[in-house]
Length: 219
Image (cartoon, rainbow, N blue to C red; front, side):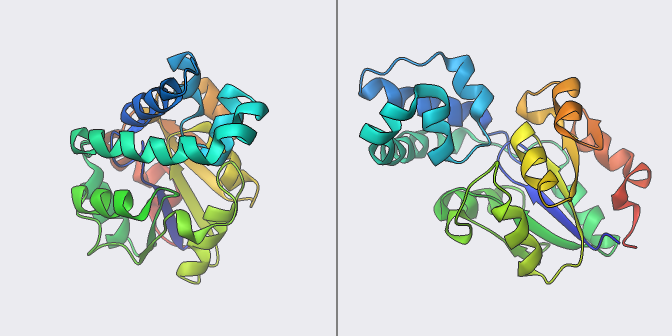
């Protein structure tokens, strides 16, 4: 009985994953930590507290984790004006809302970044709620953000729309199905193996096939 659509923001509604990757790479390099860029990209979608040990190791997290996350914010602030909404983002949100779903824009990003992205997709008038890093104790792939998103609108059951395997894993831990889009750079097989119920190439394609998904209408 799905009544709530939970949309990931970064990489799903706005084309930000590569700016995140560059910002993390620059943050690591400030401290002479050389991490292959492809490894950083593969971890985008995780919270920063999970990303640092994932790509650079536990010792780096212990020594520099908080500092690296602060520097990452500085670096991302320099790139944020390059971020653009994906084609069809607003139209998809509008259609899902029209079909009667509660709509939550779920992000574990910094509040100032989330606010900027809400404006990019013209999401404020449509969203019943949105989340930021301040709303979850544990970041993805832990399920806190998905749980918080449902609680924000008193939803009984939700479906997650995300772009990364970390979105899928987080939702699956609450038995929430995920519809995935390939806008984050993950393959169809990777997203399906992580547990996505369906995978689409773009937001436009997803909107064209809403009737084939749990978003055809609230139960």
